[in-house]
Image (cartoon, rainbow, N blue to C red; front, top):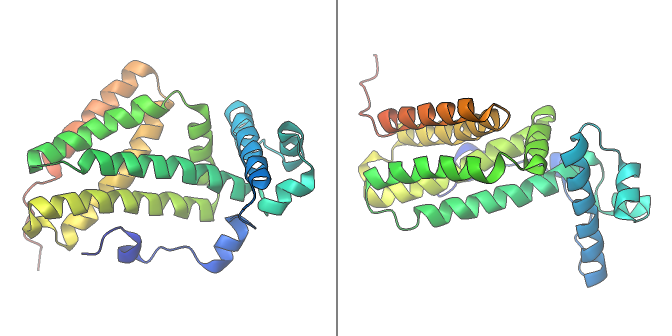
Length: 225
């Protein structure tokens, strides 16, 4: 089983998609890096206040105090800005997951870490309007949605690699499918909880953790012929 989902599921984005939502150019000089940071900071503020759909490139240029040409110099369209912000969040989440699973010593501990991850995820992001705006924005664009799916695959790969060190016999195709599914559903549950009333959100998260504990390492039933 290869590390990470993209090697596994073939969901790498094509060149055409990346041309549309990727950076047009990567800044190298300090001044250019600072300008890009200004654009992304201004975009984050607008998204937090209005959401992705209401953001306009001209408004963004004014907020960042840069010429509109500078915005298009880096970003071919609005979706590329959303991707840049998404990548920042996804990288932080993946780094946190890797750190949390680095010292796992047993399957029981692995389950505990998954549940602790859910609490960390919710506590870190449920009051972050930029995160919510960006992640909700990925639901309305096919290429951005693919990024979300690929992110789930990376997180699943981190977990699967940790489990493989503890119980290699469990790491078959079915277990990988299960971890991939749970990884994606954890993100969906967190986003649902984040827009729900606090008491209900906590109940949903507790219920989801019970599901994980009951089924993540459950014995696989024989398949029907």
